[in-house]
Image (cartoon, rainbow, N blue to C red; front, side, top):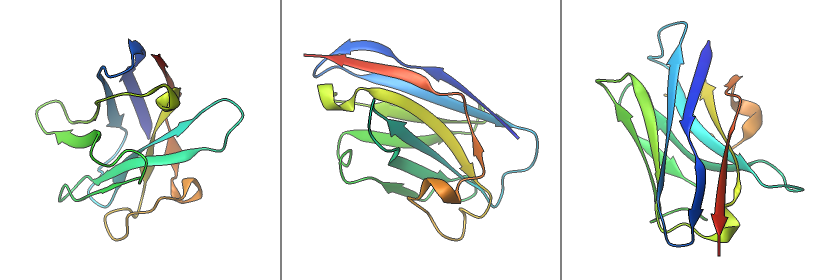
Length: 125
């Protein structure tokens, strides 16, 4: 399984960015695709996840109402829209895949089996 991430960059506070994750390598019918982030010196934090099969979602408390995760069926990818960005959103964002995420959406990094390389998001004040 490979997870190819794109997007990220630098934006001013209040701005928006879009991240994409394209998985490949197998069928993902039982999977959930998620995003985590890790700021310098901090633990990896759950951001959001989506079931590949039925589109159900789960969000971390710090991003609820500002970020939106969705599946792009045409592109066979998952998109994370980051809106109303704040300086504290600055981090490396990682796409991750949980083999059994269709059954239970997990916020724990240890439950995710595959990871992308990460993409930097920087929000300036």
